[in-house]
Image (cartoon, rainbow, N blue to C red; front, side, top):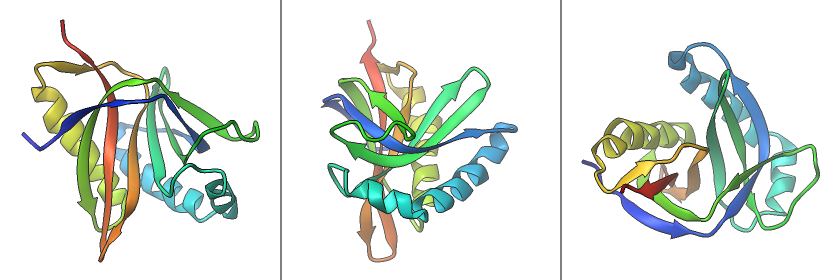
Length: 157
C-alpha cells in the first residue's frame, strides 16, 4: 500500500470556479484537465489569490445526485463575493497522501488513483465519510508538480 497519514485538520473553505462534469467516468479526467487549464488561466483566479491564506491551488471533487462537480480554487479565511463557489470542509481527520506529477493535472490524477484505487480499499482503521475531497498543488520542484490529496475519514467502530 502507498504511504499515507491521517491528519487532524481545522475546518477550511475553498472558493473558486465550479463545473458540473458530464458523461461517463472515463471522460472526467479530460474534462477536469481542460477546466483546470481554463480556470487557472483566468485573470480572476489571480485576483482570488490575493484573498487566499496560502499559495496552494485546490482542485475539489464532489459527488452530486447527477454525477460529479469539480471546483478549482484557493483556500480563504473569510467569505468572498457571492458569485464564487464556496466549498466548506469540516474539521476532522483526513487521509493525506503526498505525490508528484509532470503537470498539476497529472499530479491530481496520480493522487486520486493512489487514494481511491489503493489506500482507501486497504484501510482498516478509517473509512471515507463521503463529501468533497481535494487535491492540492503546493508547488514545483524542478519539472515536477508537488502536492497532496485530502480526503475526510472517520475512525471505524
